[in-house]
Length: 185
Image 1: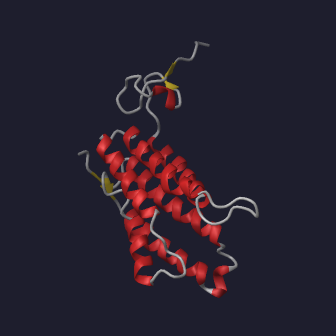
Image 2 (image 1 turned 135 degrees about the vertical axis):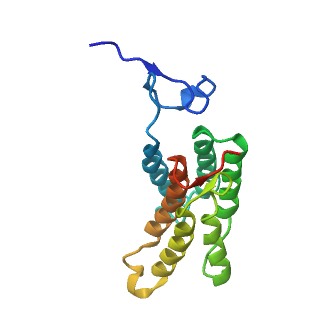
Image 3 (image 1 turned 45 degrees about the horizontal axis):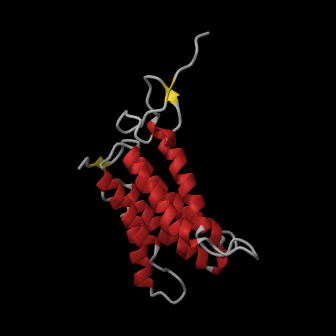
Protein backbone atom coordinates (compact mmCIF):
# COMPACT_ATOMS: atom_id res chain seq x y z
CA UNK A 1 0.00 0.00 0.00
CA UNK A 2 1.52 3.29 -1.09
CA UNK A 3 1.71 6.40 1.00
CA UNK A 4 -1.18 8.75 0.31
CA UNK A 5 -0.15 12.22 -0.84
CA UNK A 6 -2.33 15.24 -0.25
CA UNK A 7 -2.33 18.54 -2.06
CA UNK A 8 -3.03 21.53 0.18
CA UNK A 9 -3.02 24.00 -2.68
CA UNK A 10 -5.78 26.45 -3.38
CA UNK A 11 -8.73 24.95 -5.27
CA UNK A 12 -9.04 28.15 -7.30
CA UNK A 13 -5.56 28.87 -8.60
CA UNK A 14 -3.45 25.84 -7.67
CA UNK A 15 -0.94 27.85 -5.63
CA UNK A 16 -0.49 27.79 -1.87
CA UNK A 17 -1.96 31.29 -1.44
CA UNK A 18 -4.71 30.29 1.00
CA UNK A 19 -4.14 26.53 1.01
CA UNK A 20 -4.40 26.17 4.78
CA UNK A 21 -8.10 27.08 4.57
CA UNK A 22 -9.02 24.16 2.34
CA UNK A 23 -9.45 20.48 2.94
CA UNK A 24 -6.63 18.28 1.68
CA UNK A 25 -7.39 16.48 -1.53
CA UNK A 26 -5.71 13.60 -3.26
CA UNK A 27 -2.94 14.79 -5.52
CA UNK A 28 -4.21 15.25 -9.04
CA UNK A 29 -7.90 15.26 -8.14
CA UNK A 30 -10.36 18.11 -7.74
CA UNK A 31 -13.13 18.52 -5.24
CA UNK A 32 -16.43 17.04 -6.33
CA UNK A 33 -18.51 20.10 -7.32
CA UNK A 34 -21.65 18.52 -5.86
CA UNK A 35 -20.11 18.89 -2.39
CA UNK A 36 -21.08 22.56 -2.65
CA UNK A 37 -24.70 21.31 -2.65
CA UNK A 38 -24.13 19.67 0.74
CA UNK A 39 -21.87 22.15 2.52
CA UNK A 40 -23.30 25.57 1.67
CA UNK A 41 -27.03 24.98 2.24
CA UNK A 42 -26.41 23.36 5.64
CA UNK A 43 -23.96 26.06 6.73
CA UNK A 44 -26.17 28.86 5.39
CA UNK A 45 -29.25 27.49 7.11
CA UNK A 46 -27.47 27.16 10.46
CA UNK A 47 -25.91 30.63 10.37
CA UNK A 48 -29.12 32.26 9.17
CA UNK A 49 -31.11 30.65 12.01
CA UNK A 50 -28.39 31.46 14.55
CA UNK A 51 -28.59 35.10 13.52
CA UNK A 52 -32.33 35.28 13.94
CA UNK A 53 -34.61 35.38 16.92
CA UNK A 54 -33.75 34.40 20.48
CA UNK A 55 -31.75 31.19 20.79
CA UNK A 56 -32.58 30.46 24.44
CA UNK A 57 -33.78 32.23 27.58
CA UNK A 58 -30.27 33.57 28.17
CA UNK A 59 -28.90 33.89 24.63
CA UNK A 60 -30.18 36.43 22.15
CA UNK A 61 -29.99 35.84 18.39
CA UNK A 62 -26.50 36.53 17.07
CA UNK A 63 -27.32 39.00 14.29
CA UNK A 64 -23.66 39.29 13.24
CA UNK A 65 -23.66 35.60 12.21
CA UNK A 66 -26.40 36.22 9.64
CA UNK A 67 -25.51 39.75 8.60
CA UNK A 68 -21.70 39.49 8.32
CA UNK A 69 -20.29 35.98 8.83
CA UNK A 70 -22.66 34.22 6.41
CA UNK A 71 -22.16 36.80 3.61
CA UNK A 72 -18.38 36.65 4.11
CA UNK A 73 -18.42 32.84 3.82
CA UNK A 74 -20.65 32.97 0.73
CA UNK A 75 -18.26 35.44 -0.91
CA UNK A 76 -15.24 33.28 -0.03
CA UNK A 77 -17.01 30.22 -1.45
CA UNK A 78 -17.59 32.03 -4.76
CA UNK A 79 -13.92 33.07 -4.89
CA UNK A 80 -12.69 29.57 -3.99
CA UNK A 81 -15.11 28.17 -6.57
CA UNK A 82 -13.00 29.79 -9.29
CA UNK A 83 -14.63 33.18 -9.77
CA UNK A 84 -13.09 36.65 -9.74
CA UNK A 85 -12.57 38.42 -6.39
CA UNK A 86 -15.06 41.14 -7.38
CA UNK A 87 -17.72 38.48 -7.96
CA UNK A 88 -17.18 37.02 -4.48
CA UNK A 89 -17.26 40.53 -3.03
CA UNK A 90 -20.44 41.26 -4.99
CA UNK A 91 -22.17 38.22 -3.52
CA UNK A 92 -21.03 39.22 -0.02
CA UNK A 93 -22.25 42.81 -0.47
CA UNK A 94 -25.61 41.67 -1.87
CA UNK A 95 -26.04 39.28 1.07
CA UNK A 96 -25.05 41.91 3.67
CA UNK A 97 -27.55 44.37 2.19
CA UNK A 98 -30.34 41.80 1.92
CA UNK A 99 -29.82 40.33 5.38
CA UNK A 100 -29.97 43.78 7.00
CA UNK A 101 -33.48 44.42 5.66
CA UNK A 102 -36.33 43.69 8.04
CA UNK A 103 -39.49 41.69 7.47
CA UNK A 104 -41.11 41.99 10.91
CA UNK A 105 -44.71 42.63 11.90
CA UNK A 106 -44.53 46.39 11.25
CA UNK A 107 -43.04 45.99 7.76
CA UNK A 108 -45.53 46.45 4.87
CA UNK A 109 -46.20 43.33 2.78
CA UNK A 110 -44.76 44.91 -0.36
CA UNK A 111 -41.44 45.52 1.43
CA UNK A 112 -41.44 41.95 2.77
CA UNK A 113 -41.84 40.68 -0.78
CA UNK A 114 -38.98 42.96 -1.90
CA UNK A 115 -36.73 41.55 0.84
CA UNK A 116 -37.37 37.99 -0.32
CA UNK A 117 -36.79 39.03 -3.95
CA UNK A 118 -33.39 40.36 -2.84
CA UNK A 119 -32.66 36.99 -1.19
CA UNK A 120 -33.28 35.49 -4.62
CA UNK A 121 -30.86 37.93 -6.26
CA UNK A 122 -27.78 37.27 -4.08
CA UNK A 123 -26.03 35.14 -6.73
CA UNK A 124 -26.43 37.70 -9.55
CA UNK A 125 -22.77 38.87 -9.45
CA UNK A 126 -21.68 35.50 -10.84
CA UNK A 127 -24.71 33.71 -12.27
CA UNK A 128 -28.40 32.93 -12.35
CA UNK A 129 -30.48 29.75 -12.27
CA UNK A 130 -33.97 28.53 -11.52
CA UNK A 131 -32.98 28.66 -7.85
CA UNK A 132 -33.12 32.47 -7.89
CA UNK A 133 -36.91 32.69 -8.27
CA UNK A 134 -37.38 29.50 -6.22
CA UNK A 135 -35.49 31.19 -3.35
CA UNK A 136 -37.58 34.36 -3.54
CA UNK A 137 -40.94 32.59 -3.84
CA UNK A 138 -39.96 29.86 -1.37
CA UNK A 139 -38.99 32.35 1.32
CA UNK A 140 -42.20 34.31 0.82
CA UNK A 141 -44.37 31.18 1.00
CA UNK A 142 -42.53 29.95 4.11
CA UNK A 143 -43.07 33.35 5.72
CA UNK A 144 -46.80 33.24 4.96
CA UNK A 145 -47.14 29.65 6.22
CA UNK A 146 -45.34 30.52 9.45
CA UNK A 147 -47.91 33.28 10.07
CA UNK A 148 -51.07 31.28 9.34
CA UNK A 149 -52.65 29.94 12.51
CA UNK A 150 -53.25 26.50 10.95
CA UNK A 151 -49.56 25.93 10.01
CA UNK A 152 -47.69 28.21 12.46
CA UNK A 153 -47.37 25.48 15.12
CA UNK A 154 -45.84 23.06 12.59
CA UNK A 155 -43.59 25.52 10.78
CA UNK A 156 -42.01 27.19 13.80
CA UNK A 157 -40.06 30.38 13.17
CA UNK A 158 -36.58 28.94 13.82
CA UNK A 159 -37.23 26.25 11.16
CA UNK A 160 -38.46 28.96 8.80
CA UNK A 161 -35.24 30.94 9.36
CA UNK A 162 -33.17 27.81 8.68
CA UNK A 163 -34.93 27.25 5.36
CA UNK A 164 -34.47 30.91 4.33
CA UNK A 165 -30.71 30.45 4.75
CA UNK A 166 -30.69 27.00 3.17
CA UNK A 167 -32.47 28.32 0.06
CA UNK A 168 -29.84 31.05 -0.31
CA UNK A 169 -27.14 28.39 0.13
CA UNK A 170 -28.71 26.17 -2.56
CA UNK A 171 -28.92 29.17 -4.91
CA UNK A 172 -25.16 29.79 -4.58
CA UNK A 173 -24.05 26.15 -4.44
CA UNK A 174 -26.06 25.19 -7.53
CA UNK A 175 -24.06 27.68 -9.56
CA UNK A 176 -20.77 26.66 -7.92
CA UNK A 177 -21.51 23.07 -8.98
CA UNK A 178 -21.49 24.30 -12.60
CA UNK A 179 -25.23 24.55 -13.22
CA UNK A 180 -27.29 27.50 -14.46
CA UNK A 181 -26.11 30.48 -16.49
CA UNK A 182 -22.70 31.44 -15.15
CA UNK A 183 -20.62 34.45 -16.12
CA UNK A 184 -16.91 34.38 -15.46
CA UNK A 185 -16.41 38.16 -15.49
